Length: 231
Ligand SMILES: [Zn+2]
Ligand SMILES: [Zn+2]
Image (cartoon, rainbow, N blue to C red):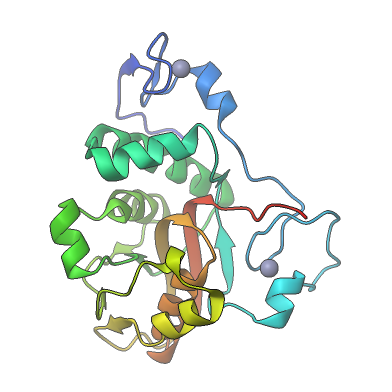
């Protein structure tokens, strides 16, 4: 990345060293990168490289509504701590750091989209937290992609019960029709942005609603992807 809007500052993880954007080189090297081989749709790590055009077993059973998911990191230590701190501690400085991590990855990936949409929070949750943690990430992505940041395009229709407490079938039912989309999107490519992609069902539900409005392609971007434990 050529843009360096920040000065050297104390590392937010170790506090001992200084670094650009608030992360020292040592801590940056400890971030849990999501590396391949990955499923070309959902980015789940695979034991072996999949042949071209082949998707993972889970995507074969049920293909998500988004076309591809991109995430630079696994949801793991120490990134999980940074994300948690940002989300619940309202440390907005962490938002700038996390946004710069996603922007660096998108720059490298040469991603492009017409619109960039943060996954909307329910009204109640937004009031409780005071901000949508996805906004800073989506704004940085839109900046890198030179596309339009569209925080008002979609909204969450009702406060769905916390996904984590539901089984898979209930999660899908819970998310059916969970998002509203303001306008037609015929022929457009939309990037949707979440901080953490867990089961992928929220991102898939939002992608489904966008495609219903005519979006040609929907890419899901997340800073971190939860990786299922191998059994
Ligand atoms: Zn450090
Ligand atoms: Zn997959």
